[in-house]
Length: 84
Image 1 (tube, rainbow, N blue to C red):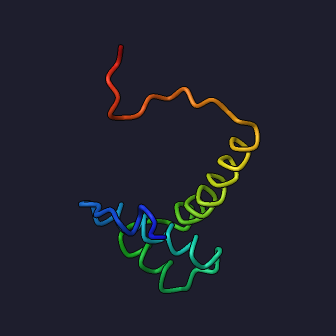
Image 2: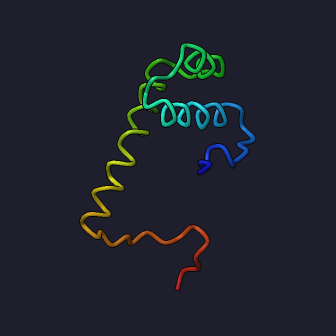
């Protein structure tokens, strides 16, 4: 299964680098290489921002799991949905 990060093409190089870094975090189970970190830093991400990316990449699946177990009702409209 290809991720959204691989399918999308971010016009902003910084956002594209963030998506690629997050994808590497997922694929390597947080064992990113020095080259992955360097690529993020080359476009302006700080060490704090790369740590935040790792944190968010780990927290989002956890919240999804909890929502699935609890049958959480999602009350956020789809971005393409029209307001009543």
